[in-house]
Length: 133
Picture 1 (tube, rainbow, N blue to C red):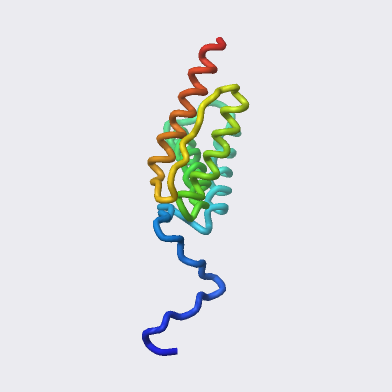
Picture 2 (cartoon, rainbow, N blue to C red):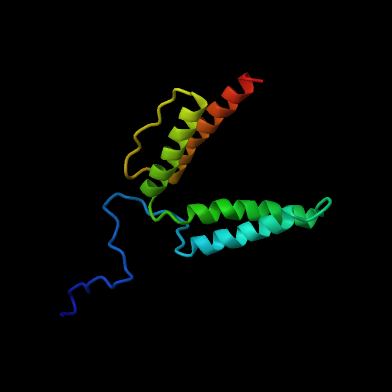
């Protein structure tokens, strides 16, 4: 191997992402362990009898936020994140009987692009559910 050649990928390395595909900020290969820790904290706090103290309420809020962040840390690229969450959003729209198309976002879309459309989905569901009461 010469000094200018590129070493082969090691078994633990992944091939680089396709050109133009955005890596997911916050990717964490240990996402599942993070998720389980946050879930355990949440379950412990919600199982406590009586009202929670201000510090416990903050810890509960933080644990719930960490569950979401840890879950999303499993995605290595924004297109993986988009594909997963758009599939769930389409199912939610179908379950709620809402006729709403999601855009075909390009491979170089940002997480903010994806989240913007997910927000539209949740707004549509909220409005639909509000109309039924």
